[in-house]
Length: 99
Image 1 (cartoon, rainbow, N blue to C red):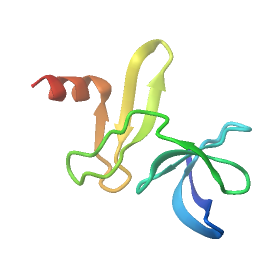
Image 2: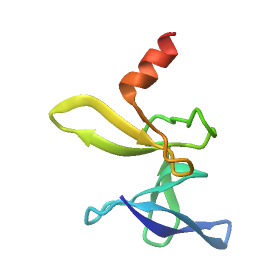
Image 3: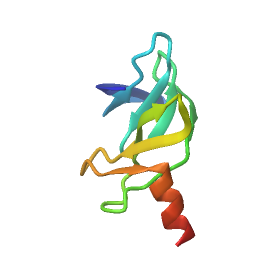
Image 4: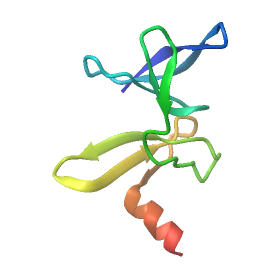
């Protein structure tokens, strides 16, 4: 994903918010630190949300974004906070929830 302004359209109003967009051709996935993951059509209308588990930063409670996956390790996920830069793996998250 790369940083970008995300166009959002709702109730006849449009707004641009800072966020991240998928770099794959045709991919409609967007991420905003305030809204989490979204699927946004070319006209800015939201198609869907909450594509991935909602992971909150333990430091500032902001939604974290999915920064890395490893096809060779199907269960590996690296989450990153857009505000403070803290990272967590899904293994760390599962250990914390089992504690």
